[in-house]
Every structure is written in structure tokens, then in C-alpha cells.
Image 1 (cartoon, helix red, strand yellow):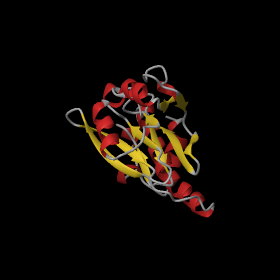
Image 2 (cartoon, rainbow, N blue to C red):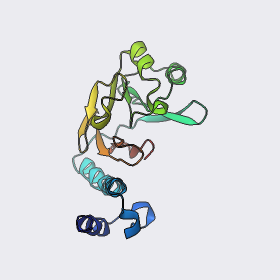
Image 3 (cartoon, helix red, strand yellow):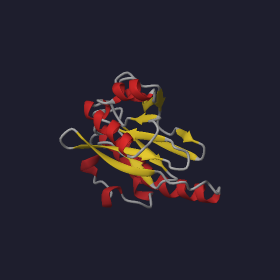
Image 4 (cartoon, helix red, strand yellow):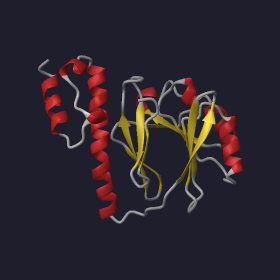
Length: 197
């Protein structure tokens, strides 16, 4: 119980509440749940700080076009395209065919990256076919590197990776749904891809 007190104080001091209200002590019994809540609070607090830094630094505000791609019977992948540079990536493709069709339908030249938030089949099922067809790089959380098919780039909590110049992605370890789960935050896009956590 004494190890939870500092985290409770930190959560209480944050300007943003987690899911609208700070957790009660009964919700803090699970260390994994506490880590997930802490990561979510840190992610929310990071939005403001990252946005302020990007604005202060005069970061290029090139916006990605973000499209939903229906997959399986009740899932979605997210197709991101930068019209200024032509860069295209997909987040959590559970199957390849709908993504391939969306790339063609939109007239994109290729698929550069696949971003996976975690290893479950309904988030990585399309990885290998997309990699074979487009020779794209697969990016995912370090904690899941041995369980994500075809992973090329493993990122850990706190990493800031530039998918292209002036387009950083911040990585947040968000366990809860799985132990290796992560969220990808695009500060210049005002977008975060949280997978299932």
C-alpha cells in the first residue's frame, strides 16, 4: 500500500482526470491497472505539453488524412496519408485486403509503415501480406516484439520516433488489455491511436 501512495498523489496532482474522475483506492488494488491509469493520465497531460512545444518550435503543421478501414466483422484499421509527402501508413490492420483496397481506391502510391499497438490477431493479421506486397516497415511496442509478425522497429515507452521529418510519434506503454500494449500519439496531428486500451 505504501508504494501506491506516491502514484495516488501524482494522479491527484495532474490537471486532467483519468476518465473524468480520479480512481478510488479500490480501483488501485491491481498494480497493472494502476500502471495503465498512470500511463493514461501521463498521455493526457503530454498532449498539452507536446502541442505547446510543437507550436513554440514552429513545427510544420502538415496534416495527415486519416481514414477508417473496416476489417473483419467489427474492427477498423486507420489509414494515414500525408498529401504533402506521399507517406502512407496503417494502424492495426487485422487483415490485408481491405487495406490494399483502400490504398488503391485513394490513389496512394504505396504503404510505407504498419503500426501495431499490440500483438492480438485482430491488430496484426494483415502484417505479413502488407509487408510482402509493399515492402513496408512494421512498427510496434518493444514489449511485444517477439509476438508481432514481421516487426522491424520496436519502440519503448517514452520514445519519440519521427515517421518523417517534422512528424514525430510519441510512444506510451499502456498495459491493461495486454502487458505489451502501447499508444501512438501524433502531436502534430492532434491524434492518438490507442488500440484496445
